[in-house]
Length: 439
Image (cartoon, rainbow, N blue to C red; front, side, top):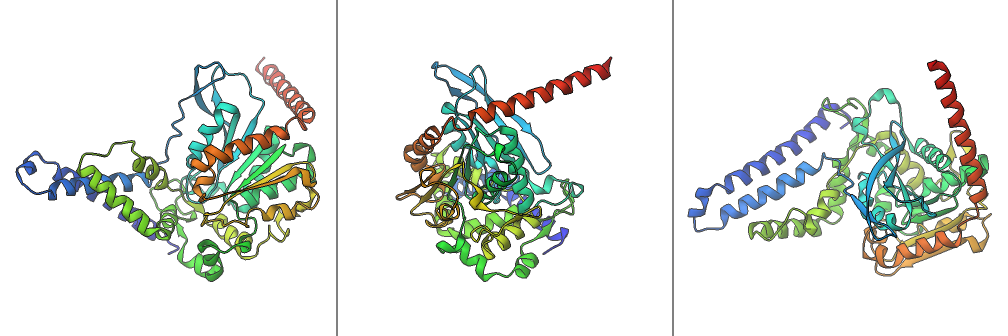
């Protein structure tokens, strides 16, 4: 599997299915087919429309689609996405709300790198924007990153988070969703030891596998059963000739998608068969519930091979975070060094990806943090998606997270002011040098 030809073959199969869908939709919608008193052609056209759309979405990065937000003044304010820090494997972006003063709450959402784009958190961002300035990590598709840019594993990921937190200042409130939770915890501990003035104000970990062995799921069982050699031999491929990252070894997003779909195959099959019937009956729309969900769910990205393998080996198999034995750039991180960052964990009782117990394990690792700076919440009846983007998030979890941020607000304001003043002075000095050089 570790060849460019297999990657291109997989892309060819995807392309072919998209073409078959488009062909079926065109043939089934010929006006002359209306003369046949049989629903066959309507069903063929509907199958083609749903199939074409589904396979087309697999290679398209979704738009954020957050156009405006209502401010405290009751007016709609235009939202623009601005890159604040640009890196080869991921950017730090801010959702600028035009005409709105800087908010007291500043939130960094750490998006997962687990096969989907950061836009998976679109509804999370939209729900927080009215009440906070929101930043997010926007990870890049590995197939679009040239081999010359080097490697990217979980240590590099952690160091990216460290740099993003340093840039944003110590009054930032970090919210990590799912996969990045253990690495965000490690990044915070790294700062606590080596650059304590850059620590965030609060850290909220939502459904993350801090200790995968605390509660078994299909994901943890898979991690135990499969050897690293099997993963490297069967799951990895080299990016084909069509993309900028040609030759880079990756874990393809299409393969990750196949894994996601197989975990709930019956549910997905029913959803698509129902949608085909709805399209045939002319009851579907471009932005109906099915299309809104699957346009995002089917949009997948490749991960670098080293990131995928190091995540499986070091987080799931060896449990380095759970054992407080994680090393970043030669430095052994001590999670117990976190003493001045309020930490909250959030779990869902019906989470089949990160079962209850895996995330709250973080609090036991925080041996240096006072009890009054620790908090946890288990949402009854919530699944994995629901704890950060569904009804449970909107109605219960989001208010609790904002309250947690407010309860711990202001503690780092003085240090944040110093950090900004130092940064502004450095920026002004740089401008003077540039102007002098221009003369």
